Length: 590
Image (cartoon, rainbow, N blue to C red):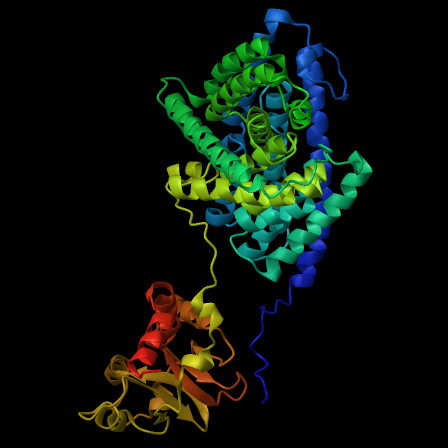
């Protein structure tokens, strides 16, 4: 049996080499942007809290400002508010929703302003004590780099989306050293498809960023950790930890948007909101200095259980309030680092009471579960936890807990922290992936083979009296001239021809062949359905090739609905084959 050559597992894309080449450049540029952003945060931290011009990494918790520490976040918030007001309001927030919105509703276009102002505003916000991570801003900045490069080359919106996502995920790779998790983030949160045309360039950009990161930051994991292999009794503990992490994620999301609503009710311009939030950040920093800034050192201490439980509870309570208020005010900063800290803190609290595993396992498990539930990206969170710790023994508990947390949030919440903001702007996002039934089937599977035709040499009078006369059998007919298709006519088209030409005119001469719409047997039903919709057609002739234009069949809109009808049955028709088979056997006495 000869198999058809046009039916493949994946679509062919001749522009893939070009996209792969551009993705290499984007991976390098995004890594450079991450290097600049991290050093900008270090510089701002030293300027704000220590009064020195230095790029050395120092924690704001080591400051000696005393009560003056309350003023620093207010100053930073005021600067960020002014930048957003007079620069670009796209720099507000944590970056990922803005990237999603640009992909889905902005044809993946970002402005040069965003590429410059986003890292600058984030460096100021975090450097002045903002309780954020650098990953959200670098995702936005890397995405802007990819988008700008895509705007310099003649690309489609889909191709520009690929470059935007490649830049965003390459930036995440450069910050955390987690290239595989970054690719999964693209799949679960940003690409809204699973195709080689987009997956391969994104993965290559992340790989390039991963190797380039070694030159700039080294190859050591961010939070090196090694836990003992859990026993079988740890499954129940993982499920409990997962559900509680899901509840924490839901609570944080609800608190964030309640806070955002509170700010929206204030009778002051949103430009001043980050400064108002700076008051809360400053007071929190006065109570718990380690709650200021990114807090990677705090996350590391929580994972290794180096912080007493009472101290951890106080620190996390302050961090949660600071983060919710700051992000709700529209300050520029990321969400991943705070979520890691809060999730790890939950694990510290649960570790004395959860049986079946190493006590140091639960901060890691709850960290990943909280992250996955909040983002709505469980696979990303699982692989991310491995990427930042290199703890292979934790894979199984991470899988169980993170999926339990994701299930909890999927059932109890309508949207995630990533999509709620976009929904409030009037755009609904449906995040479930599925293969379009129209893309799984080809035209030659649904078309009418050997349809009735009209010869181009027939007169208008003959066509109206014959095929479209009282005994009309078909709604439309392809018109054939010397074996080639020259058009498709229905009664409406024939009446229009009758109104402008003589009845003795040849039908073939009366057709406008300039906009002849055709289909090929090897095209997908989705391609042809899009063509019919864009041109306002009900049917189109199918030809063997575009050179001979020899008729192969006719496909209509109703034909293109056949795959959807089959898909509907698969989704909604419930059957019990086993019970029916047993009943038939019993009735026959077998």
